[in-house]
Length: 114
Image 1 (tube, rainbow, N blue to C red):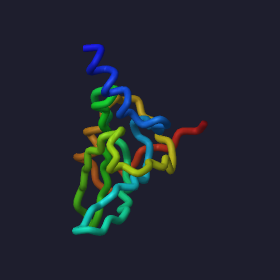
Image 2: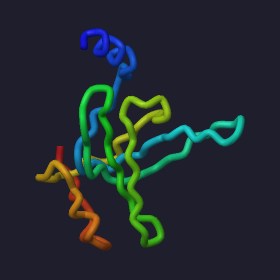
Image 3: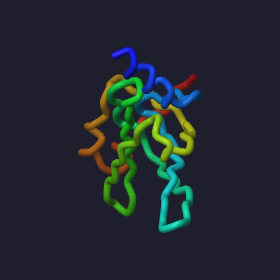
């Protein structure tokens, strides 16, 4: 197990962003198309964080054209270029799955005063 921990510690990002549930984030993702690569931005609310260490993931939800879209991003993946926290949210839950059933302004998360 120690060898496995050593290998996984080498793969961790040096400055991993501090992300909390309810935060609105802008995730910069590398997209490879043929021999070219570009960066695509996915903006939404973090509704879940799972696992820890090298396996840590976070789920981002947004509504585009009336359709809810969720993407799960590995935090330490080289595909995730950077994560910008746009605003912090004030929530009292560890998972915000209830936002899936809400529509319009009811699906918003209040901003945290910090």
